[in-house]
Image 1 (cartoon, rainbow, N blue to C red):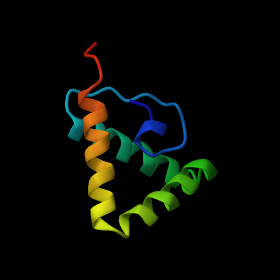
Image 2: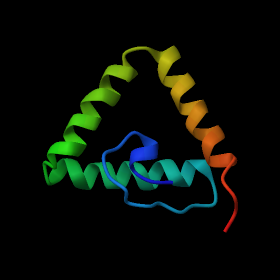
Image 3: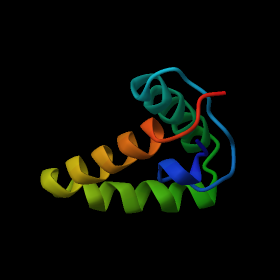
Image 4: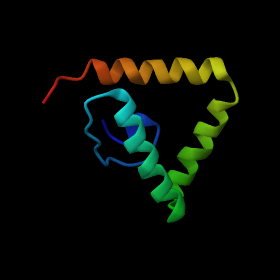
Length: 75
């Protein structure tokens, strides 16, 4: 999956065997971009922060991304 597919701002690809691993890779990338103060990623993080204000919406978003991951072909 790409950073953008996971709520981020770029086309960097992440590959993992589990959704939890995928989420961790995305999180690490997000922290790197935060430290670099990358403007596009900072904006994406602000949008995610807004989503986090509603636990129900955040859970629904998370589950939709998990399903998207699970529906990907294995390669």
